[in-house]
Image (tube, rainbow, N blue to C red):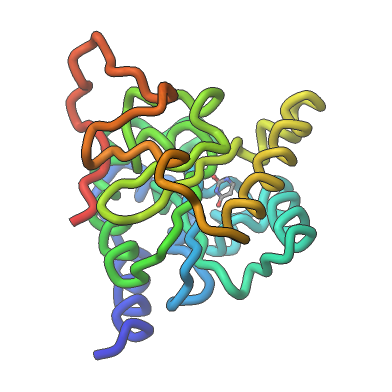
Length: 220
Ligand code: URA
């Protein structure tokens, strides 16, 4: 079976997934959408109201902002794959809980394994922490490049945060300009924080705290 069919099969399973409490309150699960052979994948936090109603990712206000700004840097929605760390809307758009993220991990890792992107853009803090490390903060990690399991991760602020504050909007637009730059050239090794080798450029200081249970996503 080819990647398209496997991803479509996965999406069908996600649509009827009963694995966490979010299944009880969703209208539609939102598996993700876009180019199945994408080199660039975006991973947000979770569906909002419009996504829950339509079953499509990033179609509400913040999704429209993201799509518009991506177009401006020459990236169309049709050429990327876009999904979320949880596939069902958390009530009142609250942040997904650790056990909900854990219950959804298998879906996301299967999508990543099938699409096999060169770059993943974690959109917002919960995605950053799920995909790379619990110890990272989006305000520090944004616009930096991380390598994990052979994939380059370039986190950006969430567009919904940009819609709430003009100063954050400035930083969000800066993240997209930096993303455009990173994608347009060779990224030098000393620009990359290598999570596989425990190397750090200073954006990821080793935490003094014990890692939280249910830690970050294991991709494979
Ligand atoms: N915010 C997200 O993180 N994901 C969506 O799909 C929509 C809004």
